[in-house]
Length: 316
Image 1 (cartoon, rainbow, N blue to C red):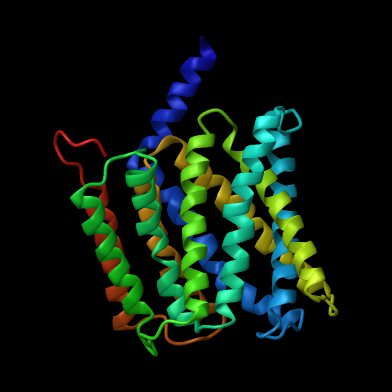
Image 2: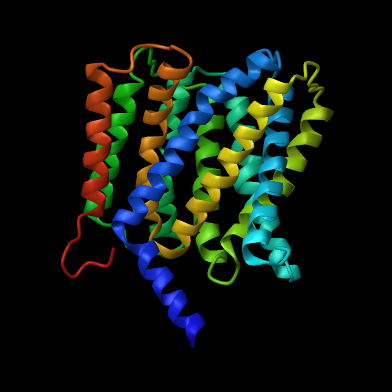
């Protein structure tokens, strides 16, 4: 009986808007910091921008480490080793890993090698729309409302504004790859919400990273990827990137477990905004305080507020 009461309290806490906003913002800050630290990682490990194979190998090692971190930390927290106990669970981990880690990141890295970062950031931000549409129209997990559409459009406008410099309207193979990587991410969000009704969300997160990362490591090696420059600073960078994935995705997965996908997904618009701001701070790329950044951040915040605004007699 006490466990049921504790579970109900946890659900109520995790469904509070202020809790969702704070935890999702922490995730976005962590993911946003990944952009400049990945670039720093490429410099430290001396990975050329055109060496997609080594980039995939680098990402694979990061995700293997992230998986180990999640499994070890949650095993300690729960005082028992976290592992899949059913064949059905292993199958779900495999499916989730294919979308969340393998397809999403391989397509993303291939796409980024054939397009520019500006277009990549804008296309990547479309994952919010796709996640909401997939959850609402395909899996029927929630209703598609005017607030969700309007808020998403406003938030997307903010992402476009902060990345507007140098944008071209031509579409190439790289753009298509990045778009399909966002579709893979959206599918992983919907599947994670479905699976977490019966499975531990953190367990799914840890093992999907471990499996997906291992596949990416093998693929990177087969494609000819090699890490030839190893240093203490490089290992620290890799561990931090692994920590980002482990911490942020575990929190995000927990939020998706207890909330509608739209309520969590729309917070993702802060991710590229933080990426630009943190890149300006860490890599000295551009000016952090400018009119464009302020307008973009304002639009993203307005979009989030519109999605969160409750409408009478409408199931959010």
